[in-house]
Image 1 (spheres, rainbow, N blue to C red):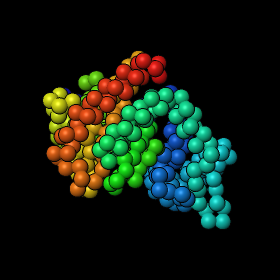
Image 2: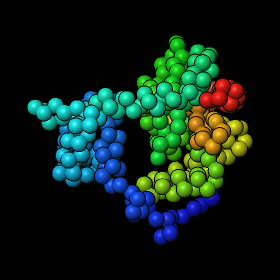
Image 3: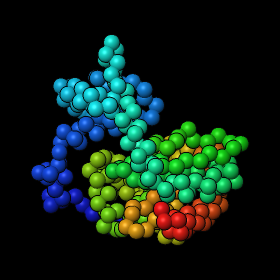
Image 4: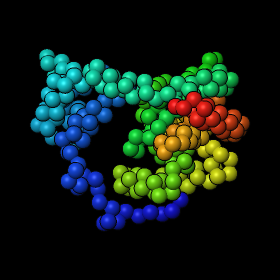
Length: 268
């Protein structure tokens, strides 16, 4: 991986006159809700977003009025509302790739008795768009919509391997900018993943994201100028040892090729 450094010429989008700060802040409020959250207080939203409480008040009022948040006035708390779900289902209903991929994913999940997941990149995270669980063993408690860190997971590393070098360098610059302290470690991990992908066609994350979780991942190229996705097998590190991951890797490479072929044949 080339060592792209952030320079003064890399003008942040926030400084572009076309950038709508209020819209960005509103979306940040919606993104601060995690899968396990039901209600968040006004203060917690302000803490997670880093926005002034007065700004949060205006944004939550607007988002509640538009149907994207629910407000529990007596407790001063907010929850995601049906408007957010409608947006998500609108996207997923048009996302035929996940529908095409799911039978292949479920067959693997049943065979290896682990979780098989597909995701795409959103900023510096991976978002699950399809998830299949195997039977007989403990599997990850994640589902569609879950978000994972880009540099520390097999899914994120596989995705980075699929990007053109210039785009990958731009994403890496954002990672460095987001957390300079973690970047040296992340850079080594990404370089290792690139070498693994070049050699084997798949990448590993062995207790890198969470100590008890390991995974193997491959990129999925869908063509037609669309961004790549990533496919992973993940589960408890006690089961997915290095030797097991290495046996599953070629299986996942074959599955990714099969999914890509079916996408092209199905016109997704």
